[in-house]
Length: 374
Ligand SMILES: [Zn+2]
Image (cartoon, rainbow, N blue to C red):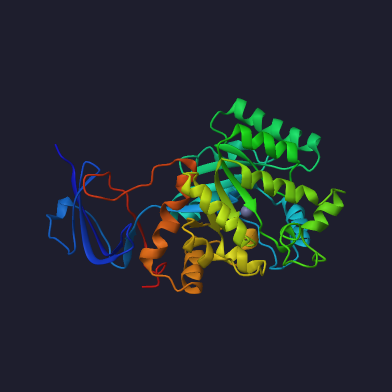
């Protein structure tokens, strides 16, 4: 017997971004068979779900997150070095519980309609923490280590995790150009096709190749490098490697893209390399970064996706807060913003985007309309 449901809502947001009022979806055995722009009166026993003041949305994708930091909050500041020091302190405190934080983070995002989370996880976080949430999480193991020996130790720890639990992580990526030995960057780019890398987030990362940046800031990432007695050319060499590679990338932040870099990425996309820039609006505000070059990037045809980063760098750990802030900053309409929060981030990882079209599996999420500020 066919299992037929009428799924009704006051409002619905479709993949094309249009809001239909009083919409009814007719679903048979999980397949969307009809979509009508009004309530239809099914028999009471056939009406699967009806609630006022909710909205139906396509499954959302959070393009960048650190779930293990979901219960840590830190003071907003522009000194990255101080922020990292405070973060390490909190992670070492006896109250820090990554299992609980990961569960909390996934629950929160799930209630907001997020069904795919690109999550960066540390070598010291037990992968058992993801056991019950792995359905929604694409785990990226972030490899750190400015000395070759340290980076190999961390790489091997990830490999151990993978041996014990083959689904532990999806890919290994360099954490950032400033935090990894060049040889390890090379090895990871060779070994893993899809990568997710923190890229040109802070101003001092651009000092070494952008002639318009005249002075090295007194604080920030270069302080970290000095602490490890490393030559800053590591940043430039790693950036060059990443920009020359033919991998598929999520490049996170990219606040300091030069015009030449935008042109380079554009050329790569034209040659069918899959690259998407990830912007985390609240985190960007938290660190008082200079403007994210959204207009330049998007007008070059480079896809952008949105992420939350973590509660350690957000006023409010909420994907909708990020969406609202971004929508307001760039005065964007829903049709413009929908690909950034549903499908763009999936492409470099070769995940097929979902489509709520007639004949396809029905996958809409019901969320409170307060998220959309309707
Ligand atoms: Zn991050």
